[in-house]
Amino acid sequence: MSMVLGMLYLPSIKGQGAFSYEFLAHELGSERESVSLWAMVSIALGLIMACGIVYLLLSGYLKHAVIVVMTLTVSALVIIQMPPVFLWGMVLPFNGSAFLPIALHGCVLLGGIWSVGVFSALYRISKL
Figure 1: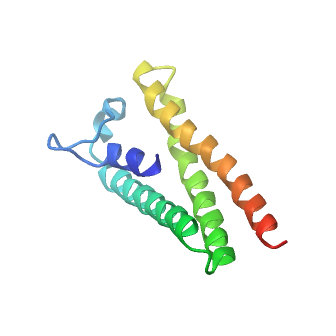
Figure 2 (figure 1 turned 90 degrees about the vertical axis):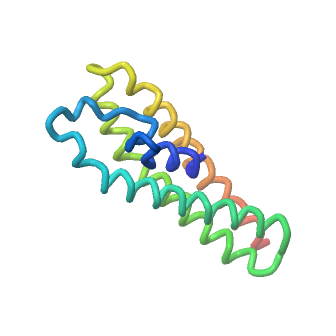
């Protein structure tokens, strides 16, 4: 989900991602670099998670280290979701179209929090 969300923020043929930043008015365009950086980080963290899950399913070697890396990665995913949720949340009372980005980031945020718990439990179980 993080990779898909990151791709939605990358500029398309029209020069902007799937979400409109019209609310920025005269500051429109200044967000491109930070949004692109955020999108690339989100995609990279999602890719690390996907590779980690595939590795855990296919191999048992270094399982503890992979679980630790995945726990740290998903923790980073949770942290990077907070700024977009807060920024879109400030816009929501004025612009109803901000609901979709908040919902998508919220899903990744809640899924990430749940995943941290799951990976922590897996780590404890695998040490038995």
